[in-house]
Length: 294
Ligand SMILES: C[S@@+](CC[C@H](N)C(=O)[O-])C[C@H]1O[C@@H](n2cnc3c(N)ncnc32)[C@H](O)[C@@H]1O
Image 1 (cartoon, rainbow, N blue to C red):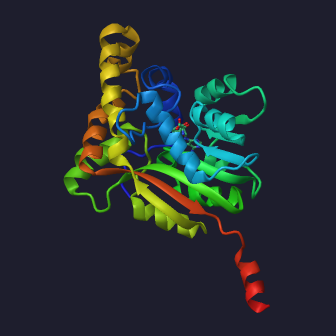
Image 2: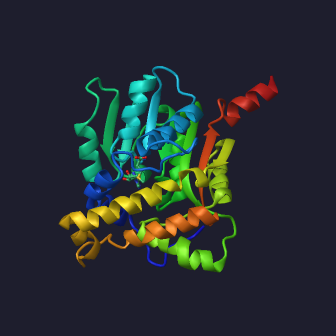
Image 3: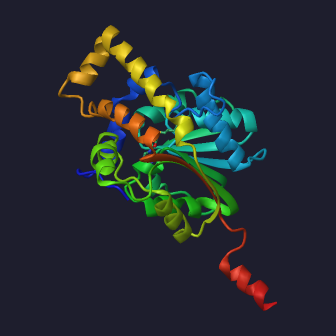
């Protein structure tokens, strides 16, 4: 696990998304996740939706299921899934600004609900959902073991969890840690960044069974060159962005420095983009024991 040199708190994470709200929405849009260039010719909008389609396929959604979006951002994924797959999605975000925005766009039919709350203190009853997913939010959790135990707890037996996560490569070099991975954690408000093995171990400890893993780092990296171009244009044309980038009162301005780091890290493989699928076993250990004894 990679840790930043300065501790990143829950308040740092929520402050990041509250402060950079306009920038995120104007530069990248209402999906705060990478695009997925499977064919290579997709527009940015098609690529961001392609990532959701990938998650939806892996979730194996069925009509009427209750689905949890852990770290829902502006609710774009929840709205997309609810309207295309006829599922009911409940999203959690640590950012008050995001929660208000998501609520304001909620489908009028009650198919999406958004909650401004820390996932690690979600207060949900056991077995609330058939499906759960976390797109680029697990990185921000201060206690990743609890991220998984909470996900496993709120899933019904037989439920499924899909996680898209920024990962470090296994055994990165000192140079990669010093110049890429540690600063990316610090500048992007990640209390830690795991690798594939870290996530596999934590999920297994939470009682989840692995189904699949894919590294799509090379297919998502174009996101950052597009963001860099759009940000440069904004710098020249919009005073808000000059203040954001250069004012000492902007707490999260160093995130700009992470953009070239992310481009290099994804290109060189120092960083990976993992898509994990886990199932919660349909039967608990007690039931298995009973079966064994029959
Ligand atoms: C990179 S954004 C991804 C947003 C969304 N999944 C998407 O794809 O558009 C990270 C999200 O994780 C949320 N998040 C981070 N830590 C959280 C926590 N402890 N509890 C709930 N949400 C959290 C942030 O509020 C933000 O919405």
